[in-house]
Image 1 (cartoon, rainbow, N blue to C red):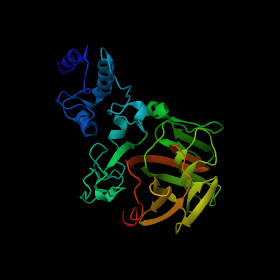
Image 2: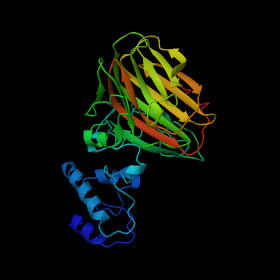
Image 3: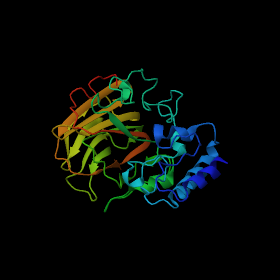
Image 4: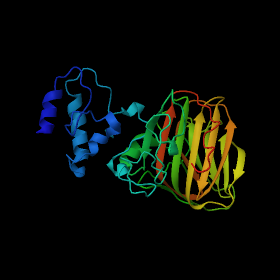
Length: 325
């Protein structure tokens, strides 16, 4: 009956705030679509209901913003990533909380506290700014292949990743994939967790997190990278810059955090392996671009990605300074 009532309500509408699949009076976009995960609908019916809600929503409306294939209230043209229900149930930090409720998906039992009241706890808040709050753009584990394929692609002249779940590359491959959408924010932060085994214990095996990748490979591409020697580096101008080295090469779980933008066109990279963290920064020429991943002779799995942004050019002076974060 709720679904029927919803259909009757939206057909012929002129100003509909958005779909309300669970019928609780709150549009699904509110609260980062937490309404979609209530007890009123079995989880196995929600994908079909999402599709129905979208189809019905567009019928008869004169001002429809655009398609939203993952049903998060953000149209695909403005959505940095697509995440389905298979992504929602992932518990990347193994703290017993899945991605629908864990506000720090990569920090086990993060300490409570939100000094700047932006909804992102201090333990994983990339930008402390009480005046200009952060926006969480994405939490995904790349568990839905067709959603991955909807916005990740190979660039001209590059071999693409196999976009099946989990998102992996093998030690025999040289692959790259980038998002079809640019992240055009003054400050953007990326947080990746995964596992890696570098084929060679030198710089011939590497993994890069693209921060600004163009439509075609060029010296304008910017990334944070890791290699088989345990080096962390800023990649810009087709060269490795400001390299720092972990005490030992990575042979398993890792975390790579990166921030791009801010004042003075800064790139900040931080790698964490176990209890050890290192960081490096660089000032580079920044052009519009897209995020993505590149792997060369590395067996790697991307377990989870979080993207946050800030509408201002944030100072990075205290960003990641606390090694416990």
